[in-house]
Length: 168
Image (tube, rainbow, N blue to C red; front, top):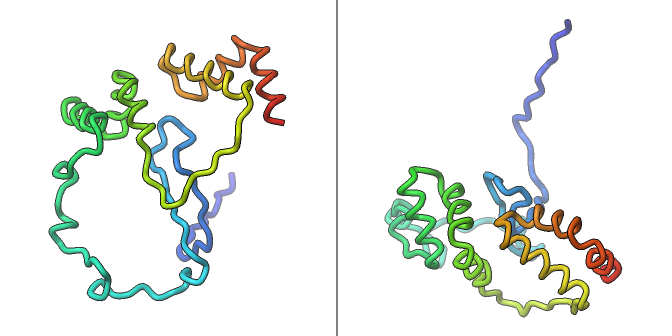
């Protein structure tokens, strides 16, 4: 049996990174977020910390996350579960989502304030109806969105056909 040689990348440069705003997998360990930066600022030198508008101090960096005020009641529940069950915050969030679906929905709908107006494309009645079915199934079965979509497709084939026709 021949032995494979290992190739280890020691030096590499990432020119572009594209990520999403929410994980595709239910148990994703990390989510990368991005923001829009003008092209001319890509290679601009980073000013030293002393020249920045709001320099970071050791106190700001060392302060534990527990001291910050929770964004919502849902986040307080997540912190409570993580502390009580001695589990990671991600696992606590999954437990809290299943135990408190109404608070989770409110947390999701709160969102972040955007600097630009959000333009939504108009949706047909078929799209809205099918997505409501998926929402109902997700709430009823307390499942993730993907599972609810699969169940909705099996349980409501006519609505699925109308939904697909509306999308195309």
